[in-house]
Image (cartoon, rainbow, N blue to C red; front, side, top):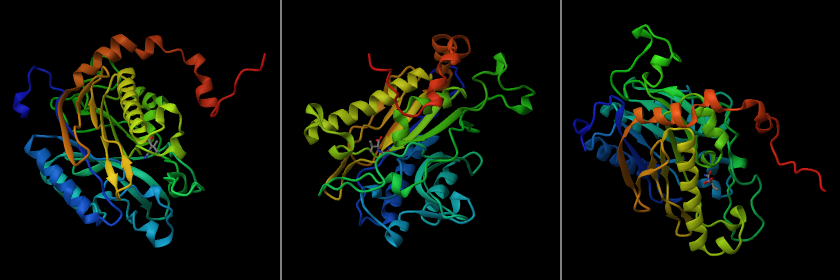
Length: 361
Ligand code: CDV
């Protein structure tokens, strides 16, 4: 597909890719993971991709399943000394390549802040147009436990032990140069006027893995007019201690089928409900011969339909041309938040965290 292959007059078309990664094992050197990612960027460039999305914690094995401390744990983190992610030694080749191709990139990695040594599960958005990281997101919903499971052989999910919950919230941002002929401040117009809606530089947002299951996260972006949501994930296909185990999920096969179903359910419904496209990208396959992660990377359109889905559990590009102008129907007709939302009834969503059942009869 080439950008010359654009089929209609819309100026909001852009060719995007999800860069799914297959298994990365404990003893896989970080540089091998990065080499595989560079190949995916090269392949995407050959297919005229303008934006590439990688999975959560992209270049390393999904280490939160292991109980680690000290240097063994620190080895998985990128130590951010001056706050410029493009200069992180392990990741620099990826930013350099994206810069060479003027390609935008979502990149997930384990962040250790320079000044106070805080650990976050982070993604950044690199703009090929500006040659800089223009947005950072830190995963808000951290699944799993702080303490490892007691059952011998259980697969852990120690994200609550290794990361602080994200402190940046859900900040939508505009990506310059992703589409042509946009309105901007220099055009002498303001945001949020009827005639400028959907005509500025594309509005994007980022989530990481478990966040995609929370409608509150998507809605926070929906309320900022998001047109494209990016999400990388590592979703275990078989972890009965974490997910629970009933007749539906009693075997590795049925548990995996359910995990794939819930992945698709979350990303299709929330794309529809917020009238935005989404690019959802897995790290998948069986890590270290015994830890299965689901694939199922998908690009979803703004009506909730899957445009393209990965066919393997290996390194694989999924590519689609998306037309952000299509978001307007859902935003203006189907949902039209400003006309139909009833915020006077939604207070409970932010005032209360857990469930409080009504009094017993
Ligand atoms: N990395 C994740 O956040 N994984 C969770 C699993 C543990 C349920 C997910 O929501 O996919």
